[in-house]
Image 1 (cartoon, one colour):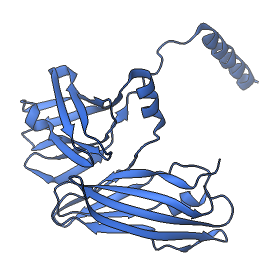
Image 2 (cartoon, one colour; image 1 turned 60 degrees about the vertical axis):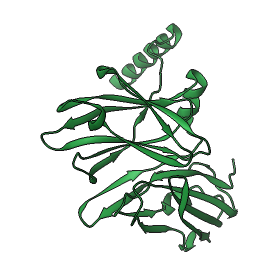
Image 3 (cartoon, one colour; image 1 turned 60 degrees about the horizontal axis):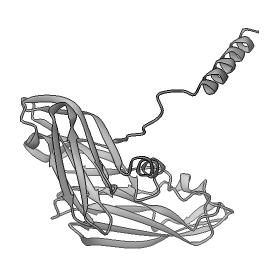
Image 4 (spheres, helix red, strand yellow; image 1 turned 90 degrees about the vertical axis):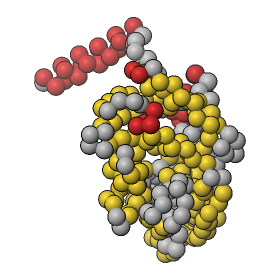
Length: 270
């Protein structure tokens, strides 16, 4: 297959006072290029509360099996006044083609002069196979996080960040089954909402699972930070998709697997 674009990616933007550094994985991208040359147009947009607050369009060029124009490789941007924002990166191919529409995975870095640095991976805006299968099977998308920790004695909590990069309002459900907590969050188009679990769980110490789901997908991050200061972040984590994989094996498949295991053991003993 030949593709003329990469599926757009979404990253959490830097919180107020923080700088984001994004560097595209050019070595991995070069492995997808068909032929010896390719020209990419890299479009970056940072959005907060439904409004575009930063845009950037640059070129990267690959010729004779090496990168000759790195103008659009990196982005460094400091958030001086917005509480929450997100970065959308769209890469179109002006000349040439690639073998995969999914941009190879990579991390972005966040730095703040007053707090520790941290990193985070991105999410595809659309085209995620597991999300497609979820919605086809259940009619909704579902992500989970295995261990939210709240401890007021040591001033630590988690927040869930819900990014809606689409053009319509989304209603997202948050569920803590062990505490019988169910909360609906309305997220405007091209906007972000943050829910601090310390504000909805009235316990001094708690650890447990959380699920986030809805009929329309959102981009989710879980952030570990100080209760007293959201700016004091320890980690940013992505959730795990609910896969609904089969818990039973068809008899024929189980029989074939047994034969395969037996033959493998026989060959290994010779």
